[in-house]
Image (tube, rainbow, N blue to C red; front, side, top):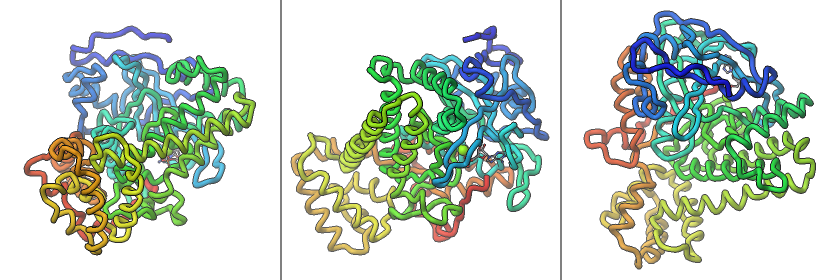
Length: 493
Ligand code: AMP
Ligand code: MG
């Protein structure tokens, strides 16, 4: 790795130390060098002090004009080498051909005790992969990405993270004229399933091998011990993806655009677009207004992830060679997902002892009850934590009370031998009080459009520790207002 000279980051004007990102080692076929396009009069909206600390970025530097210019793409930070990577993908079930970072620029990577972390700017201008797009991101969608990636991190769900959110009065045309914003986001790698698909489908199999070798060496070194490292890679990615999906489902997260170009090779939640946390529980819920067929409905996400892994498997076939091996690797997705899902629900139910025969049936009986009454997902699980002490608030969530009572009776029986206090404490650590509901995002966006960022700061801070009670912030944990049902979030961002 070609290390650029590290610089002392304490002085106000010095940039963070930057290292050439791994893509540069992979070769010119993987990216294009891009000069970011400056925005007018950039301003800070929020900075993520916790993440900055983890990245070793000095507080003073994070508050400097240089950081503001660098993290909005208005200036190229010394030591960085902005580039956009090329990838392809399947969108809504169809091969979409070449896509690529149309509005994301990789600045470089920073060393951390957990390994190098890449920094990417989203919305810093056009790239050779922008196609018809303008390379920009609007304020509302940038706020949603910024808040949600930190919310997911707070929930303990693997995700890309957000270091800063900046805005500019520069106009951006969507359905109407809006203003621009830039999220500086981080991840150990932004490689997607679509990167593999790109080099397979374009017949560049030596580059495909180089990419796979890089990912194995850097992120999945255990695969080197396997007799067939590329099949082992597919299996390892399938397993990480399975565990990610179990976490999404357990918290009621809908991604909205699970195209293969939005699937992280590291099993991270990636590319926040028309996502939503469920309000009322509905397996058929579609959060993306553009997804008329419901391909990415909440209840279909686990199957879609499996389908996407098939695309990855297909892309790895030139390296794996043996179809049976690839299929066997993909097959592990189902068993790992089911085990992870049951483990999630057992934890949410507070079954803190060893698994018992009837546990799965208890979960299976609950789901239709929740769906039938469109019971509020987050409130149900949080109120369940206190059910032994205060049963009425939970019962009040159901219209069909006798049906709930019947389920509750078998649940109480199952919990008889458990220490209620212990159980309650453990449940509160896996059933969040706060999630980024659509209407909360919407309220913050409305204020931000008026130049008031205080609600955003407050919400971000609460979402960073969603399992705690935040006295005074009860409204953020309440039912959605009626108008929440009419919020329409599309791919337009
Ligand atoms: P997404 O649906 O956001 O995952 O984007 C799909 C593809 O479109 C990716 O290649 C993006 O980089 C690209 N894209 C989305 N919006 C824009 C934009 N405003 N300008 C340029 N490219 C974009
Ligand atoms: Mg994308």
